[in-house]
Image (cartoon, rainbow, N blue to C red):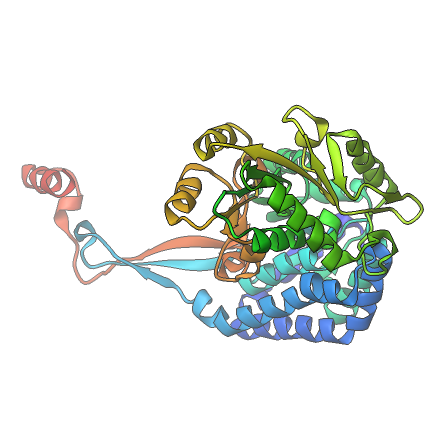
Length: 456
């Protein structure tokens, strides 16, 4: 493998050649990426099974299908996205035309996490290609099988001067961050996001940070409890809760708490069986370190469903907690596992006021039928994105930006927002030479009088 500094320089030289600026080139590379996914699909399934025990269904819906959809959507709309955007020009600029040109940044770095190791490596990469950049992808070392197959796929499909995968641990990430990169896209935890931003600041490198946080679910007393339970259980325990927008905890109105809990327990059995630890398709915890971190939470509150573990296979049952306090350890940091605390409330306004003062989460979900309350919650709470009467589904809509706010992230992507993220919007004013407006220049009382009227 090339030395990292040589690799960056190789990509920079290729970018300067101008090849990536062409529409036909970008479309060709996106099609190559799609063909690559089709060619290596079986190998990707095997890698995801080894790394996280993902079933073929979960691998398809959460890992493989998403990049296919993003590529198709991008190919369909790219020509329109690339067009210079004409904007109005004020009367003070008579004779001129104004436009915004979308230009690529150059050499981009995508640092991907382990929880969706294929999807979260390729989704930003699609945006970077569409915008005309070169890409260095740094996948997580925690999912080594997927990292290896990703490196092989990319190497056999693309020139390293255009796209390449650099494998390795945190030291490799640090070496990459020491380079003069033109744009950094990071998905991971908030603490690591702060480190990324600090390192990027040394070169004033722009960043997108897709982080996380404690994403709440609010279930009001008029919610459709059966559907709420079904959609919360699906959203929480997909990928064994190792999802940045997974419901982190549930705030349920005291009048429907017992009904919701009993319905959620039934839904867990429907999705994972009576013995989830024996379900061959149930996703495992990524490694022993994270397994032990989650195991510590099992002493919090009262376990009312689940709680069993298999240390050898790194499995933890879908687990529901009652009698949890805000001060408990499980409520201090993002859980990122198949553990779901339930807290009750009696007054929606009170709980909204409490959430206002907490860190802004990546997602928020509200279950309830009254539109006035729905609007109240979404008007008064800040979060990256969310759903009314559902969980997770917002991130699969390419017309919606996906990203955080505050401690849950900076910037957004998916669909056109990926193209926008990896594009600099360059302002251009084209001035006429057929005439020259004299009052723009100082030196006469008339100029002063005209400018005063126009500008004040």
